[in-house]
Structures are given as structure tokens and as C-alpha cells.
Image (cartoon, rainbow, N blue to C red; front, side, top):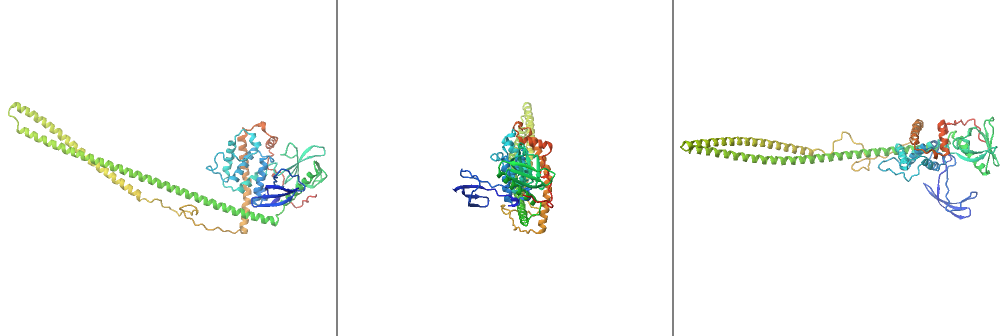
Length: 549
């Protein structure tokens, strides 16, 4: 694999057939293999089954440029993630939360509140135990802070989220450093760190900040004799550094790491070989193809969502029209009932008026009859006049009552006409609603919809594209542009990390701080926690003498 990154494989079973001979069955993401192997110089545990882990021996300086294949990137991501969780690589608390959010994005995809509900990270191992014990925070509080950043990573694919994880992890102080216990000439115990940038000498109590560093481009010769190891700087004015290791085999391992890291250090500063160029070109083509596929899926998803919104809107409007029709129908029925009641009341009033008119006529006839049959005597005449007067008063009252009833009948007839007019208008409105088109006319031609949406037809044309030289140049320019944008975004990222650190600082338990936490905070106060890749300038390959062993 590119950059001397080996695959990480776990053995599902390993059975001992003969002394020092094993049958190994390897299960990877792509294949399953079984073969016999013989262990010659390694101490193998007698417990069965025996589990081996194949890990990267040499770490890349820039993971984005050197990890070409996606499977290599994924396996290296799993290795670095495990080293951070196992605290083999020190990571500050605020950076641990950010890395956890990228790990969740790589595993679960985009954040969906309806799917990723409270407690969905309860069984996940995302933070080092040191960070969890350092603060008075419940798992729910940690999940809330991780989810807040997880929601901001929407739209990133798995490989993009893993690469963002690695770009942050590669700036950690202990990333890619192999530590060895050594003694100087005075017998002082020290630590030797070997990484992709050079050799570093540490105090045993401080693995974050080296006491002295030897970049690969400043080392002239590395050699060992028995247990003594010698480092000769390129500048002859600088004293030769010698130290002793505990075992001869440790010196051999140190020398192998030095040779490999120095070779990769020089190779990175030269033009890529034809094979590497072809691999990178294939990787760029594959990345472009996946990017186009993601864009196509995003467009289809957006069209599907728009279609669903249009369908929901039409269903809502149809339901609203049905409710309006129901209300109009009910109003029409009420109008008809009111009209029937008014018509019945008008008929009763008319009959009462006729009856009063008949009684008035009968009173008039009675008055005439009384006048014709008046008695002759004065007494009878006086009584008769009194009766006539009373009859006239009664007739007048009955006439007034008859007139009032007639007016009331006229008023009821008018109300009846108004009710019938309201009934006619209600019927007209109902007719307009029932004849109104169910779906509103569309002013523009609808956008084509995905073929899997019911009731929406979509004719999908097959996509085809060719990668030309101009396309690859344009893609290279876009990649360079993305690097510049990443550097601009790193400032915003640092501000986010500082904000989270300030937020959780009040919950920190000072008595639980480890030595590495204290050292990291001191470095941060001194302003020396910048990227270790910016502390050493990359020299030109020309004119540099290769390492002599």
C-alpha cells in the first residue's frame, strides 16, 4: 500500500498444528484467506486462539496526500482511533469531542433527529476514559455535546469524515511516535522517540515536548555497536549524541524504524514514481466519480423531497376544499330549514289575519243589527247607545289588530323571500365549489422526478463521462483550492475547540488531571501547541546526502 501503510487484519481463528507451525484464517473486508505459517523468532502465547493485529509501522506526514486508496485510509483511521481511545496518543478533551463527532458521522451518516434520538450513542466508545473521568459530566451531557458537532457535519461521506478525523489526529504531539527507553553516558534515563519527521529525546515524565530533536535532513549518520547507539548530526559543530538501550534487539528495531522513516522522508520530497502517480490519478478519478454520484443522489433526494412537499400541499388543499364543501352544504341545509320555518310561520300569520278580518265583519254586522232593533224607550235607547259605543270601540280595536296582523304577514313574506334568496346563493356557491378543479394549474413545467416516486413519472437517462487532461487539471486545481479553504477553516475550528474547552472547564476535576493533561495545559499557556508539522521546515531534496548506515 502507498506510504508503507499496511492493512489491519484480525484473525478470527488460529490453531496450532505442530510446534511453531500455525494454520491462519484471515477475514478482511474483501476476502477470506487460509494458509500455513511458521513462527521462528517470536514468543507466541500458549493460549488458544491466538490473535494478531497487523498495524501501520510508518505513519504518513500528511494523511490526505499519502493515503491514496480508500481501504487504506479506513484501516489507518481505525488504528489511530483505537490508539487515541487506548490513550496511546494523548488527545485534549475538547479535541476528543470533535474527533468523536467525526467518528459518529463516519459510522451513522448524516444526523437525523427522527432516527438518532437521545441515547443512541450510549453503547459507543467514543472518548478516552481519562477525559470522561476528568469532568463531572454524565454520559447524556457528553452525548449532547458530541451530537451538537455531529449535526454540523451533514453531507460528509464516510471517507471524508475519516479523513477529517486523521487531519486533526496527525497534529497531536504523540501521533506516530515510537518511544524507546534509553540511557545517556551519565546513566540518565531518557526516552527516544522515532517518527516521520526525525528523532526526538524526551524526559520520561514528559512525552509531549521533546528536550532535543534531530530532523532527518540534519542527521548525517546513524549507527550502533552492541547496545550503544550513535547519532551524528550533519553540522559537525554539534556534538555526537550517544545512548545505550536495554537490549541489542531494541537497537535493531530502532535502526529499522530510522531507515524506513528516513527513506520515506526523502521520498516525500521527490517527484512521485510512475506507479504512485497512476495510483493517485485512479484515486482522483474514483473520488470524482463518487462525488458526482453523491451529487446525483443529493439532487434526486431533493427532487423527491420537493415532490413529497407538493403532494402534501395538494392533499392539504384538497382536504381544505372538502371541508369548505361540507360547510357550504351544511349552510345550505340550515338555509332550507330556516326558509321552511318562515314559510310555515307566514302561513299561520295569514290565517290569523283572515280570522280577525272575519271577526271584524261579524262585529260590524252585529252593530248594524243592534241599530235596526234599537228599543224605543230612552232607557233602552241609552243602553243601546252605550252598547253601540262599546261595539264601535271593539270594532276599532279589532280593525287595528287586523291591520297589525296584516303588516306582520307582509314582513314574514319579505323574510321568506330573503331566506329563499339566501338558499339560492348557497346552492350557487356549492355548485361553484363542486365544479372547481381539484388540482391547481401549474405555471411552469414540473421538474422531472425520480422513478421510485409513486404517481410521478421520471425518465432517467444513463450518465456517461470521460476524464480528459483538462478535467484532471481542473480537478487538481480544485483540490489545491480545497487545501487553502481547509487552512482558512482551521482557524474557525480552533475557535470552536476553545469555546468547548471554556464551556466544560467549570466541570473539570483538578485532582484527576494526569501528568500529560498538566503538560498539555502548560504548553497551551506558553503558546507552543501549534501543529508539529509547522515547527520543522521541509528542506529541498537536492544537495542532501543520503543517510549512511
